[in-house]
Length: 490
Ligand SMILES: Cc1ncc(COP(=O)(O)O)c(C=O)c1O
Image 1 (cartoon, rainbow, N blue to C red):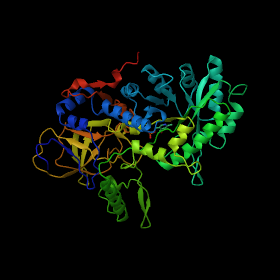
Image 2 (cartoon, rainbow, N blue to C red):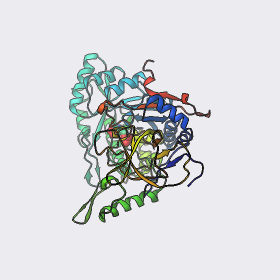
Image 3 (cartoon, helix red, strand yellow):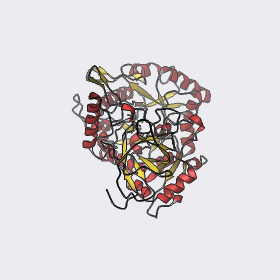
Image 4 (cartoon, helix red, strand yellow):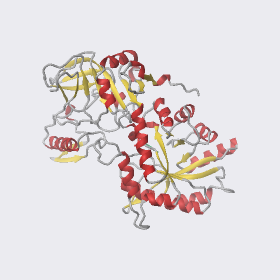
């Protein structure tokens, strides 16, 4: 055990060591600041490090610059609701992808405009569309009803709507990719040519681009879909439409883990424990998506793929370097040749290393199975993944040095009245049992983990979001801005 340390990474039987950043360790080493923040804002706190967000913007900028592409980056703010990140996106020179009336309205108030915003909401109401048209914000249309509504509103207010068409149903390796979103790729050219433009039903829609967002994380599918989109783009351009961009949405992988070996071992050992019916890795034999049927292993790990050697900028490179058989050109060359501005809408990956959730220990107890349960002042909705578990080892912040390693196994539990409010499904081994009032930190939670499923059930207050400006000065309480206090007035 390391000497003189007051914080430790939890060590489950099969470790999944998260990638961390200096700012996180700086905070762990300054518990008086953590204590002051939790005292002031309540538990849990969500801390966001703005310079890390800026670094991610830079990475994407650099990769597109290196290909000499025209490009625009829009941060998909659905991944995290904080205002501070929207402001930071504009300050970092990128735009924001909005998916609701309030996201759009707030982003406009925070400095957004026709150049740095896009509206991609899955359900578009009349007020949303009107707000977008009045501000010249491009609207990504998904279906004919949206065209009708947008046309009617544009007509009423006497302003043209700038629109892109979302498309789906690309054929990849002879299979059509299903999506509930968008116009069918095989019909969109006909649809636009028949109905959109001067003297046609939708004469108030000005089409300037195409959009897709693929489910899953395949670079190959993105490359093939991009090639198909470029063909559609040039057909529409030939027909006289003022085409300028193709937006390939988000879903750019990020990497959460230090070590691929740990990830592989965890996967193998989980499968083995399910097969052998000897699961001592997770709470109540939760198999995280696997199951045993007639002695056979079925299902698959139902979580984000936490380790990814190809991620962020290398993911983009893989999409762009793909060579199209037909033309013999790379995707990047095709984009340049056809004068396409490439747009992306990353949510999760722009939040890599940006956030951390810190909660206070309230109680410790042994359940009837003799397992230690450590109750935290937070609930499952405040760190909830859309899948079976968030597979990163947490950090335990002790208020004094740990003198003897006692190797205590614990589960962290939350405040909802549900049996399943167990914050991490994996059993975590700590050097000693946490004391009341100590803190647990869950790192890299900014993308989808903090807000996407957060509720006010039991009338719990929503957690506070703090923007950490970071700097070379000594860490202090005053470097943390309460996101709720960020003004919406220009
Ligand atoms: C249209 C669109 N754009 C962007 C995103 C952001 O994706 P991610 O956070 O995986 O980068 C999503 C996510 O659902 C989306 O639906």
